[in-house]
Image (cartoon, one colour):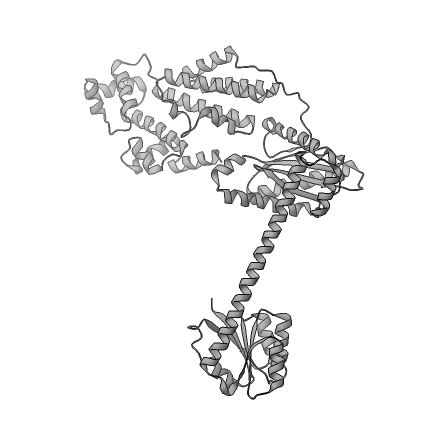
Length: 546
């Protein structure tokens, strides 16, 4: 970076002489302006501060001594080089006393003398910048360290690690926390889908998101009296409100709800994320804070049934049953019957009935895990019996029993189960061969299922089966209601859909994977089949899983 230099002299010839004395850019400097007196120089300096000022000492309106004094008071970071046409000790003494880097007599001024003075100023500027940077870093580290201590204290406070009232009060005072020790309430907040955020973003990006939530919340809480927020762990936060002598519980409650609602709306608008918030009761003594935190944290579990992006104002009054119950034998039979009959409507009804029972009974999480495991076992068993590769039914590298644990609400678990069942039923439909079909058609369909990804044709299929291609074309159309090529394209499009849904490979690679030779032809067949382009289908899949 070139250092900016301002030249101040009432003699225009002297200014020109200085400007032409050096190759400024080559030596690391640039002239940013010039002025005829100190007063004009002050205007230049205030509008666009230079790094160095070269100033004559004897000037009208405002002389060099006054200008250097102005710099010392208002811009101490700017270095001054004093010039004079005669050896005047008073000027030397005053200019050096006010902080001038050097004092040069004009009759001794040449390129070497000027450059030496400029380099001396440059050295001081660089040392000052380094010192300021060091001080700034130390201050930042001190601030961060103090903030870490505050956050650790709040974490220990709500988790019960610090519970002696005198110790709590002493810590609050020593850390300068804006917090009373009576008439309090707290809110436990948790970011929705935080584990997906951690999978999608780096640690640095995730920490930045958490900092942004803290900043937004802190800004909102400025209007809510004494309130502090702390990030505990894993996308979970606690907000502690203290109200001192305020006695109206209704007013306190409304104040908290208003603040939480503003935070909820703000993080959704600015960060595109949602969170659930659980409000504690109002408690009078800070020694109760750990117990109230645990109650609010427990109430937050209600979001498994109530859903995300919610403010839970009080725990559900419905008793959560702890007894174990599993999938009814009739439910299992109905699901298998619907799968084998390729009846998606009936299948949806069966799954819906199961999850309605779970929700109505507020089943324990262990019971839900067991029921879902049984539903997954049905999928795996029916897939094997139908000759379908089980891996095709699940998302890429997905372990079904682990995938279910990632979801935070019962609605998400249900939707995931339904999606997997829908994929299975499509594959069953794709691989199912009607027993009433003629033998050549059955063999042709089996050949297509096995070789759809290859460049197969009607003639090749007929030759493999051992029949005339014209005959195969006719009976195939009579049996399936579709021509050979139309049926082959249908199979290819279905497999293309599965690959697109997985998001495993690019569209251009999907074309080759399912047997199409031309992207243009694939595009046309796909659009004719689904009334949307492959790109539109890919986008819909991405939006569905956001």
